[in-house]
Length: 278
Image 1 (cartoon, rainbow, N blue to C red):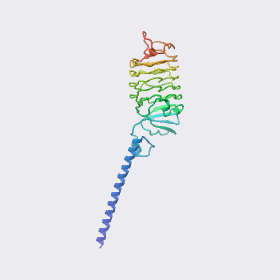
Image 2 (image 1 turned 120 degrees about the horizontal axis):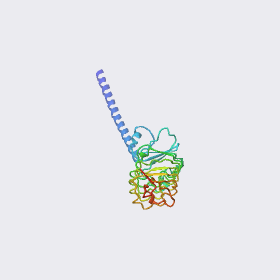
Image 3 (image 1 turned 120 degrees about the vertical axis):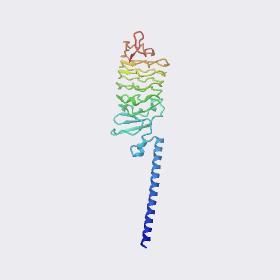
Image 4 (image 1 turned 180 degrees about the vertical axis):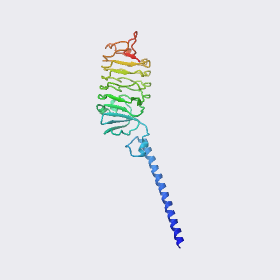
């Protein structure tokens, strides 16, 4: 009788364990499936709610162009919208990679433009336009890591820095302008700029560049190279309006009567211009 009872107990134990294993397997499968569904939904919606475990950490691999304005005045661009630690309060503008920009009203942070004092790029982003990105940011003084801004697909840089009256230095040497067709008013109103190095700019596809340096009243030197060409330009009015301190590399000084496309070239002894060779 004891042996029979013992056999029944063992059988019952084995049965219970078998059931528990099956239930655990089913539960694990459901968790993994739910996790996969969450990740997929996150990828489709481009929404990230903060660091909430492995699921959300995987979400960071989804690429886009995200802009975040922090309380300290820094506008930060990143390929993910995970916020930076220790930066305090912030406003997120979501994924801007597919935004069409034809007016400043379409710039998500434009209403807060005067609060922006610095811009930083934390990793590589590849927009198709940078038109009006920093237009009217009158208190912007610093732009860092611009080498992370891949502009190889950008076609319009119109008014990109227009009205950045506090920007005394702007390193644009890493910008790829190979496919840019519109540079109108790109630096217009940058009254604090003294030097611009455009020696890396390829303007072979540019059609429009009117007001490019308009009212850059403290600009003294513009560096350029052979990659700067004006052969395709159709619109170029008021290119150098009020650039009263500008001097070409060979000594050609600014004249209010000489503000046209004709002077957008390297200054040589027999060919006057406002650029300096580099």
